[in-house]
Amino acid sequence: MTTVSVAYILLEDARLPDEEALIQSLRVRHADIRWNRSTFAPSDGADGPLFIRAGDHLMTILLMPAPIPFDQQLWERASWLWPEAFHAARRHRAHLVVAPMGSAEGNTETKALDFAENTYLTTAFVGAVVAALPNVVAVIWDGKIGRSPEMWLEQSSRAFEAYPDQPFGLWMDIVPFRSGKTLGAYTLGLSAFAGREIEFEVDGLDERTVTGRVAQLSAFLIAADPDASFKNGEVFKPDSEIDHRVAVLHRKSRFNLGPVISFSSLDDRSGRIRTYPIIPPSIAGNHPLLIMLAKVGHFDPAHPRNKIGLKPDHYVSEVRLESFDEGLAQALSRMIATDTYAEADINARSALARGDMATAKSILQPWADEVGQLQGAVMLALMLRDLHMFAPAPHRSP
Image 1 (cartoon, rainbow, N blue to C red):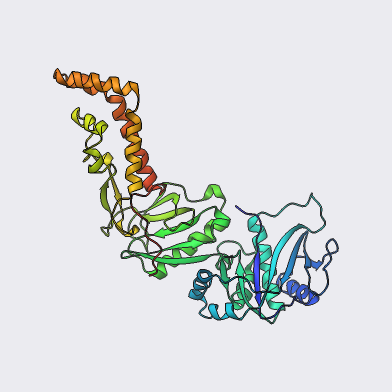
Image 2: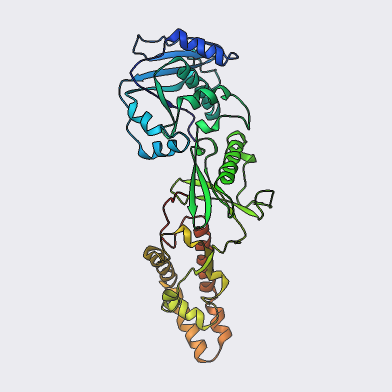
């Protein structure tokens, strides 16, 4: 996880805040911190950069007399909370870059701030800049989260508040999606604090309940010690809003967000899950190893260990990926590409010819075990989304 928080303040015209006005704004809004001009790194003229001391630490403002590159997805997400977001993006002609700079005295003994502490300090500072400048049209947090100046003025005053009152809505988005009849949501920006985003997909909830749950979970994760986080494999019991069990998994995102904490219905009450063979009939009926193992009762394509439950609405279609099946076939072929297996195959066939099923079965047991391990590994990889049997579906808005 990164340790530096960066904000971009979008302006109608290129100007730095007045230093005295900014310091006064900071002192009024956050009186418990010592705000002063920096003597270690004095500001450099009308065009900056501007340096302000915040206690034992240093904040900087850099003026960029040009607009930031347009990001369609960023402003689309911002418009869900702020309908004028696209208009604000078009209006801006310059921007400020705001970031912490470490010790105010160049003193290596000053305790470095962690990411959360940097975030709180930067949030407080940005709010004061917005209050001190009349031409702010938007604020972008960490290059991902766009918010209105009004929201920043209101919520940044709580920059140092403890859980659950911290202004996490300035730092992350909650993005709703639909899978079949189920409404879900994922976060964007939480991973900077928790190392993972949230993907929440619990059946039977409306969008307001989903958003509220994700907001609660996010606020907790931002404040929580990593050891107190939600454990992989944890199961939550039903409560006043969710009438069934919810499973927690640490796995990869459905939407290419990286690692996520996934919350999903453990009980398939909506009939969303369909069962698929891990090793398909096209391989089970044609691969020489599986044919031989089936003869001695070591392999049954209908056995539960060869089945996995997946949700078709997570995928573009139910057409298996060629790369997935080719990988299975190659793994099976590597198992028999040895002199040891060649000898075992001859001996097992000889035993079968004599009617000695027990001996043939014993000879092939090591390869049966290896196939079982392959099935188990593939099942786990599919659950954790390290592998995909089908092409994943893209994000779909509610």
